[in-house]
Image (cartoon, rainbow over all chains, first blue to last red; front, side, top):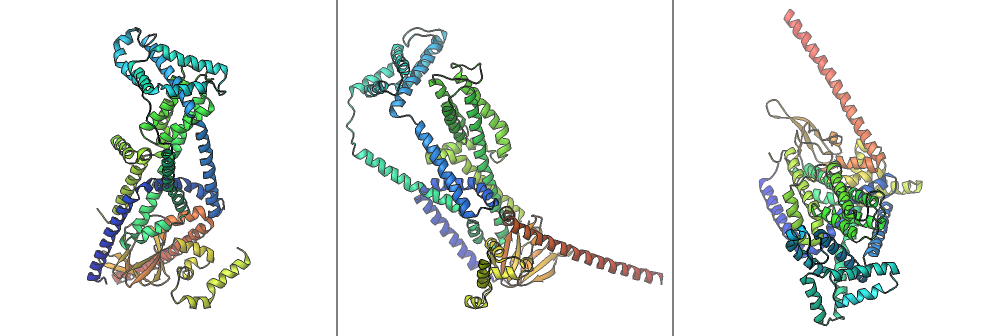
Length: 425
Length: 189
């Protein structure tokens, strides 16, 4: 028989142990908060990779070899993608050229819309109706893109280098000089004069690289945790589950097994579903952009960016959309597979491609790949994404929805199982 | 497995001298080995099963599971005593059987999560081994041979119990028929 005093002592002991454990956990979470993100990403990667491990093991490959193969594949993928991204990032000089091209395109579109020759001349009815309202917007845009004297010199030096053919050079130069003929709105001119007159504060070159190195190593020390967590979770043979189930009271033993299994299955399904969904969106965008004549490298880059950012609700599609539009604005030549799309219709083409991708995402990919797992209230999504970005920046924004979904799955599963095991009504 | 490796393993596992050095405490492997369900399993297979088995300790008066709860695991009595009970018509508990060291209960939970047909009540301080259904499902995926072997054993046990139930039913029907005839005879007299 159960001794009541022993039972009471046990209850007091376990309650105190739980409170102590909870306090330690809260303290550790607060102190080690920079490690939360790398740990979460490590777990996420392991979850996504688990089916590949199961597949390899089903093929008769033992666990160590399977994990080695996965790590090698991961390494190669990260190296390949990293190299590609690095090669696609424009140098500071190339960025100046892009700035000139973008500024030229947008200013020209603005002037065409308003039927003006330059910012000072008189335009059509659109100018009369909205000109005053639109001018500050354009002014701030020009203010952002305009170059100071130093940058202008750098731009000219780069333009005169061997990086360009004569044809390209004259085209970019004409765009640059055309910008002058538009006559900038006040703000932009002010900025140019201001930056040219004021001599910049002397920088401390010795300190800046040092702080960058320190920053790099401190970031590296945080992210070094990620591969270990990834490996630990991937290699786990049920020990993590055994530990947590082991500390459960006998009364909740079977229930905890069921909760673990259901949560594990639901989270795995959701995360893998999200990745599949994002990949499909990316793929549709890549195919669409190739059809409207984007260069393969640009189509792939924009598709990958749009696919990855698609995991962020609301904001994701805008990022993909923005990347496509920006490229469509600066692109000089397109060779469309679909005949009726010309260079001028590139922006419209991007809009159509992104809309088709979003339509397919909402009507086919999400319902079939993710099911109802992600049916969150829009307000929860908006608050989650905003809160995530405030707390953890980009990664917080990126991981906010998966985290909310995971917590929802945990709570709903516990509730369901507690009812099934007659623990609650 | 190579002959030498098997010999080496057998020597290590079955060597009585080693067991004496290890003390009298029987290991999870020994319990599994002594269980009729796993009698013809190899050492490596038993080791794989031992890896997924949960060891739980219960005090007298505790319930392992209650009738009507969804089943998730099969239990093997490591050490101790368990009473399998069912609620009678008047609400009192009727003991169906008592289980001791090495005996198994709740096997059907390895097949599906249908509600438990009886309650398992702890009579003495008891140590149980539990095998979870989803781990068996995982075996069927990753180690299909071993998973299949366990499922086959479960089918044999279920078949055996079905035959026993049929025999019991036939026996009870015969008894009922006999009673009916006797009652008719009394009535005719």
